[in-house]
Image (cartoon, rainbow, N blue to C red; front, side, top):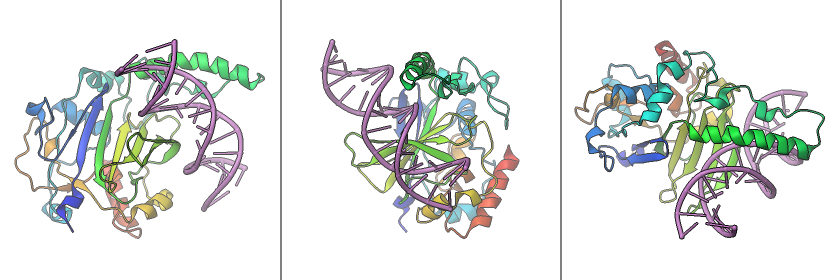
Length: 283
DNA sequence: CGGTTTTGACCCGCGC
DNA sequence: GCGCGGGTCAAAACCG
């Protein structure tokens, strides 16, 4: 198996600013933050579920086959605000509505008043939605994205997703799919598309923070689980996630956090269970 | 029957 | 102001 096939790129996108960073490569215009993460950045990643254990495991590193490290972009003030303790819901509990997070509040936009003609309901809903949407846009959730080599687009990540849209992408033969977390209280969204230049690469973008745990078992994912079985497992180094600690050297690898991992075979359910349990213990 | 996917229509921001 | 592209909605179809 080619090492190239396991390469992963990583991107953060905050307030519209984004940079893809290749393994071991400095983001343009921000070379000083390439190889280490600040506490803030670690916080961002942990908010996306990347609570990595501090220890490194040589056996896992071997199994990973030697991925190169990737880098993170410096997070902006808006992310710090979004992820600050007062704006963060307590772990495992639903997020509280806030001006920063208007869409978390009860789904009034999808509960139009009954007894009105469709057109009236729609226009009434539209006017109220406009303000909400505007607010939502103003306080856009931080995004995090990564590229993986995979035959399947929708990679198993431990959460359940409902597809709510698909669009063609300009200058790309491949469509982009839009998913929402099926948990009604969770506002996390995910975009999945194939790289137009390299169809074997899947670009997955997460937006928002889960306000609940991932599923304790993979049993509910039979379909995506099976579909994912042909995907390449992918990994990244955990060394970048040591706050203020520069990457010492490439070559120490850990598997991706469980809910982003691709099970090697459909029959490996127990393995996944183990991983997920470990992750939940970390919470 | 309930949950998910599909898909065309619609909205909105942005660049020209 | 207009057109384009990204993102979302929602009804219908599909599926287990």
